[in-house]
Length: 594
Image (cartoon, rainbow, N blue to C red; front, side, top):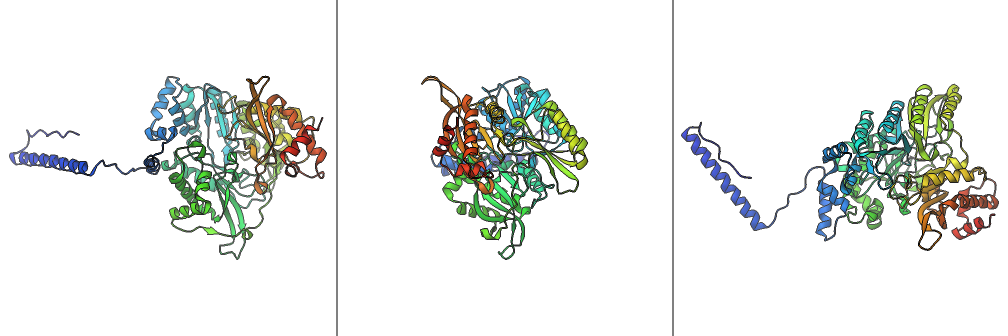
């Protein structure tokens, strides 16, 4: 910076001499400091501000001689939240994003999904998956005005709006905020939508209402910029031990409500049992820590875990950047010691026998009418065809929630929703109104557990049309196989495993499989069986490989018929049956079905 000598026209002689001496002293001091710096070598300023921890972690990578992945460079070159004006400029010109900006805009919840669609997808965030009737109506208006006229309910109890042209991206984002919702941090290397028990506060068997804890963590994230730009995406779930499973064990942080007995060194009562490192797409559930956390301390503990992850996560390899791989390297005990050091205190630990058995979940409680803990009130679980809702259906459900319920819509991780607070005398009328929308509150075991990710119709990573093929499986199998025990069939399009195929009774992951010739490939799947969650958590085993998509419905049919023909008893579940056999045996049993 050049220092200009100020004009001395209006000063006295004494004032002029002072200014001349002052400027000389400043210049001499500046030269002296520069000389000292040159003698000591280059001086780099200590990073400050909300990005300081991330910059230090990146610098540590560089100092070790390794290279940052491109996404880390994008974050370092320009923080996405500092580039909103450029997003607005791109919207004004209806201009698609550059690869770097396509990553940055995910901080706002926008994903440019070309070549699947030459448009954005917008993913929201809503703590515990709960919104009001007027918010759902508002989202219908936004999807109709700026998107493709529909929405998808996701496996993180969330909503996605698709087919958003670049010119409509900013209007959509700001419209979402006008509704009191947001999409901030729902993509890229950030903490994703916070899930919780969908029946929180109304469930007769719950140990804990998860809503205040999910909400507190949600706002903690939104209002702390230092919690954005992690080494990789991060999921947190709160399970209050209600009737509908949350799949918390598939999250990076799993808070599971448990009743701790007296006599084990901690206060008896309801605590959160802490699990860490779940990522079933990489075949790992959250690992037990032996730690229990007071519910009111969950946010502080989660914050400390995230900050240790910021310091230790891999920023050189996207495939090994999740928390699981930090735990693989450090070990759970060493990692949790670092968390305790961050917190400045020890966390409570109890043995397994200190924890009372948790209430069992009901695999059909997300479908149909069920009594709430409030006498005379019910929730109604609505079946959504692989998670899709038209704008007309969104408005209709909002109206039903307003007229017959408590005005809330509760999304689940099973790609459907609940209408809560429906009085006994209004259940039949509300159900009839739902059916008028072309939706249902009853489903076969096959339909009730049929889950599919977006697929290649809207996601560039997917190898197959998962939603279309899931519908085909349902259409083919439902009239041909009568299943009378709980069943989940999950189809996922790629290794990201958004549909959690490894933990399903029958799970299918899309692949390009051999076609008619050696050089030809077609859409298809690898099929797994025997996966489970909760107390039955286990990764499924491969049964069939390289099944053409057109053959998948018949393949599932044969496997289900093999189960019915060979189950040990009428009440043996498909899960138990699948786990009594290895993959080859299951394949032979299915192939024997004509």
